[in-house]
Length: 192
Image (tube, rainbow, N blue to C red; front, top):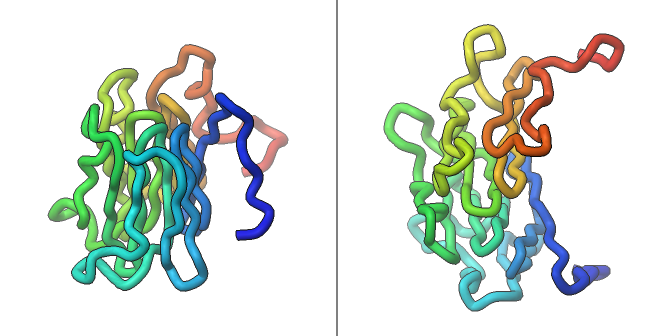
C-alpha cells in the first residue's frame, strides 16, 4: 500500500468497480484497501470500521470493495456480499447471497452516495438504498434488444450505469446535469 495519496479536505472520490477487481475504495468518510491475501485494511469514520476477514460462513477473504459516502460493501472469495456503515436509506440491504432465482453468487459491486448495486453470476442486477431519483430502477435484466444480462456496473453519487453483455449502456438516477443521457450505443464513428 505504498504511495497512497491523502485527499484534500472536503474532496470526495467515487468508486467504479467492474467484474469484482477493485483493491481500493474511497468514500466521503472512509478508505479501504485489500491486501494480496484478501484482508481488508480500512481507515476513516467509526461507521466504516470493516472486519479484516469475512465471517467463516461467507469465505476466507475479500476480493472486491465498493464505497459509498458513509458505507463500504465487499465481495468475499466465495461470491457473498457484506456491507457496513451508515444504514439510512437501506443502502446496506444487499443480501449476503443473491435472491432466489437471480443467481448463486455476486460478481461485481458499485456504491453511490446512498445506494448499492450488485451483479450476480447470471448477469442480473440488484440495487438497494435510497429510492429518490429512481436509483433502484435499474432493471434486473437489460431491456429487450440491448442484451441478455449485465456485465459491469458503475455508480456516481445519485446515478448508476450498467453495460450489457452486448456492450449496450443503460443509466438510471439523477439526470439533472445530463449524466444519464448517454445513448445505449456510441454515436457513429466512435466504435461499437
